[in-house]
Image 1 (cartoon, one colour):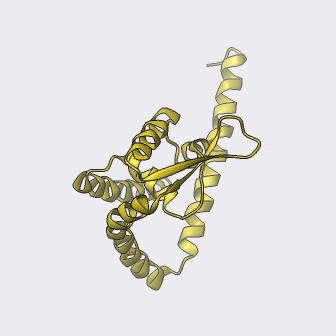
Image 2 (cartoon, helix red, strand yellow; image 1 turned 120 degrees about the vertical axis):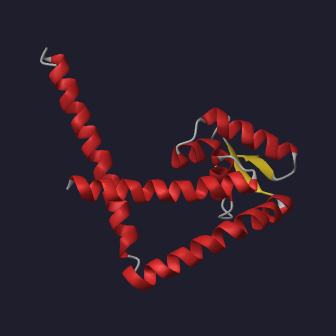
Amino acid sequence: MREIARRLIFALYRIDEAYYLNEKNKKLSDAELCVMYALDDGNPHSQREISQDWLLPKTSVNTIVKRWEKEGFLTMTPIAGKRREMNIMLTDAGRAYAKDFMGFLYRAEDKALKKTIDRYSDTFIEAIEFFGSSLQKAFSEEMEMEDGERGSGQG
């Protein structure tokens, strides 16, 4: 099992590296790429939602949103029933920027996915999603066990 886990984690790091190199070449930070990815689906999103879904610090999302709002890339509208939360959407200028930047990324993803799905079908995505949720649960269980051992004076 250990070798399989190492191969999987290494593969995931290789994916991260591909995105990192793309960000570096295109002059977008990791956080900016995540915000752009979130907003480029055409749906409204709150800063809180983006922060939680993409595991970004709220302050990073807020900084990006404020800058992009000033640059005319997005608009913010109040969410009914929420005091301070706003829905964020790309403007026409933001969609043009996203199309320019994300087009390169989407074409690369599509090429890689086509090769992968042709060979493995799309069940590999289900397997990775299952592994991700199983890993989160296993980490929680392990943390609870360690906390329990520390609390009982055995650690």
